[in-house]
Amino acid sequence: MTDMSITPRRAETRQRLMDGAMEVFAERGVLAASVEEICDRAGFTRGAFYSNFGSKNDLVLAMLEHDRDLSRAAVGQVAGSTLVQDVTAHPENLATYIGQAVRGILPHSRTGREWIMSVTEVRLYAAREPEIRAAYLAYRRASLADLLAGLVAIVESGGWEFAMPLDSVAEVVDTMYGSSILQALLLDPDGTDEERTHEALRPFVDLLAAIVRPAAAPQPKELEADVA
Image (cartoon, rainbow, N blue to C red; front, side):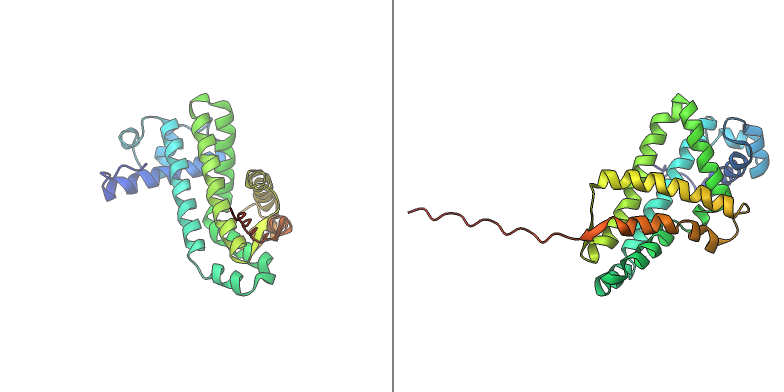
């Protein structure tokens, strides 16, 4: 949870350090990245770094928390948008609306080259670094839950439901999304073509649309037998 006592100036410093870290992680990986490189990229001294983060691992954890905040905010915007009303009015266009929801939840700032490379490197780092592994897994589960909540809101508003347990849907989303963003990076190495990036996500969207079905009608309650 973000410390409410953090001043705007300190928040800006932290953000610049996280932005600098994202660039360095994307280029060199988390393990090879040094605090000095991150400070140089952000334009700060080591003192500024250590007054905000106790270690590189603390910085990584702060970056995960920040990304989760972005995810939650994006899902909230999609759930509060006209998409829900659009799906309700035109449920036959569900696949189109799922695609729009994915675009809203995963804006270009979170599908560009640096973001894709840095989150991939952080995932590899978490596999090697026991100190952050549990926190990374918790972040991953929470982020998937956020994405799934947005998708469920869209699907259910059109009178549909996922045709498999939501835990299984989450696994599909995790696998397909990870594969799709890496494919986007291969198709667009510079990460500057937003349309190409979202085109790479099309199989992901198509699969989501393929695993929904009309929602089952609520079963009427059995009439209680009259007692004489």
